Image (cartoon, rainbow, N blue to C red; front, side, top):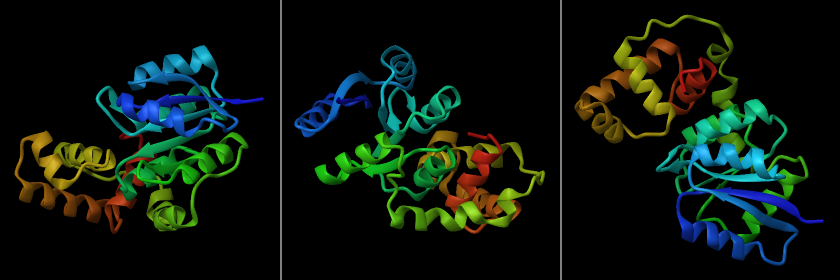
Amino acid sequence: MSKKLLIVDDHEIIRVGIGLLLEGTDITVAGEATTAAEALTQVEQISPDVVLLDIRMEGGDGLNALGRIKLDHPDLPIVLFSAYDNPTYIARAVALGAAGFVLKSASRERLTEALKLAVAGESAWTREELRRVTGALATPRLSQDIEVPLTQRESEVLRQMALGLTNKEIAKMLGISYETVKEHVQHILRKIGVSDRTQAAVWAVRKNLV
């Protein structure tokens, strides 16, 4: 019996291509969505066995959609699908309970293997991906319930960092200079007691800032 897949991606060519790649496997595309809102509706309507979820979409952040879907469907396996090999994305995906993370440049074999593992209730994470974020997830400061006095602007910068934006993108988003963003990032890392952006992203997720 074939397993039902929901594809969430705002590019038609990606959705069509995945459908073609999965021909001949026991995974069938049962639904498609182009936004996070559509994804939530489709999950309720078609009850998929697995979801392949893009991260950067016109209709919203896929990682936020991951968190929202997991609230109502904690056992539904969701594999993140992205063109960006961003450790911040990977850290947030792990923290939010994703079944795995596949790059859009990956092979057909990697994609189908990840989906099959997820459907079977197994982890589709590679050792390399988990190794990159293990240090961030295990940082002692992240497990302590400590109030950190971030300024409003620092909180805004941290939120954008956790969404995976670069300093340049944050500067454009908030209408401030690149150098100012760099200073804010340094202050944030020092205040919350972490050494890099990936750890900061995990901290932000656990503090429900994103």
